[in-house]
Amino acid sequence: MTQPAKVLAPADVRRLCAKARKGRHSTRDHLIVLLSFKAGLRAAEIAGLSWPMVLTAKSHIAASITVANSIGKNGRGRILPMHPDLKLALEVHHRAEGRPNEGPIVRSSRGAHMRPRSIVNWFTAIYAELGFIGCSSHSGRRTFITTAARLVSKTGGSLRDVQELAGHSALTTTERYIEGDRDAQRKLVRML
Image (cartoon, rainbow, N blue to C red; front, side, top):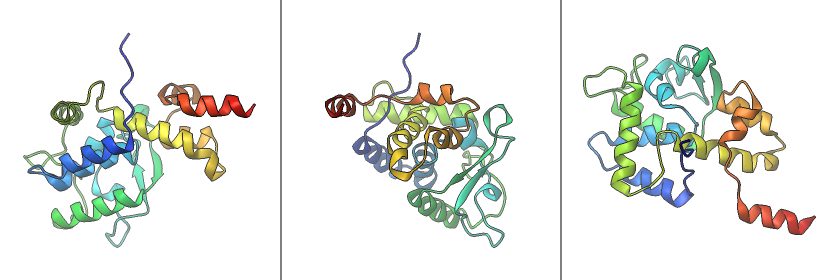
């Protein structure tokens, strides 16, 4: 049995973002990281994302991402509120790309949608360069879901909200993504 993708600490996510911003495709690469860590998108969803899914009718970056059924796993699309850092990165990338209204957001060197396998390979390479062990293209998604689960009670929400953000049909699937926190568990037991 394989280990689940590693959940990254905030400092590691910052290192990953800094590394992504230094490459030849800096706005695109930084955006790939944020789509994974701040929206919890899968590699196939990142690869399939197109401009109409993030733009308003006036061609501004929207307040949410509409993951179309055509790119969502098992045909399950969803609408995700836009994280401020992700919105800013999308605005920067949109300008850098010439403000397109259609087409792929994350483009290959040839201008087409990157393939999901290319997204997976991109994450594998950047994690190797940073020396991050146990990470995969799913680390961002797992970090997003774990962090959301830890914070949801502060918003008055529930794990059902996290499930919907993740696009899971069953709460049991969402639960498998959530990594426990030993410090929180010790504090909780002391409070009993």
